Length: 312
Image (cartoon, rainbow, N blue to C red):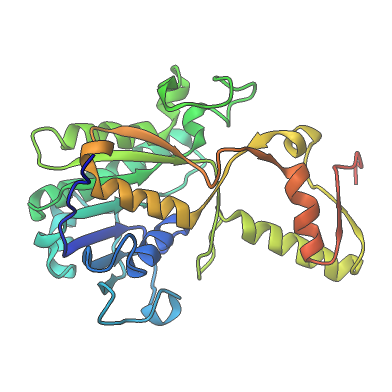
């Protein structure tokens, strides 16, 4: 079967570029994934102050896409019209954007507030792109396994989770912002020349220069390095969780893999578009923390053991 020809010189716009998964998308684009010349420009949008010097992204090179880093882009404020004006002012060549990676997210302990906030954020982003970027062909965004109800006591679906399982029943579905993003993208893409998909990882492992509350490696590194400092090398370190958490199966996904699949999906809309959902993981075989914990502890000079029933 003949491969579809991918046009060269695309312009990628990455929302949430300083986050754990968004940083990885920019990094892989600048590394010329999947091939040199496919993207000629990458525009990275962030809300917090951020500089190229502290980004740890690949150094500028004639062989890499041109990078434009735009800080102080707050998706959580203003009307769609005001955000459109902001994007027009701040982003050079916004009219030439061909692929958007929506990796922005604002957490809130109140599920209703979280849904409302994130719905309005993506409405601003997509509303602006519909007005400013006539060459847009694809929007990719990451969901998560909350879409399968892993946060609900007792669960909803029986693992292994499959994309065909559909949405959570109400009222749980109304409490999940992922579905709100899906609805906005479905509505905003009608009668447009662009399409979209959702990428759904479980636990994310990766790197980000300014810290991330969602980075499992950072949590484990902080905990185990402090444990080794206090208790000394060679100490036994129990897994700080329940026995069920220690033995339950999960599929981790590295930020690089998430980024690469997101880019691949964006470049193959005929295969991935129309709001399709794709589970993503580093490997098909699931693992357990009972396998990971001893190896993690060993890296810090400790002996990792299972949970200990200790009230202290």
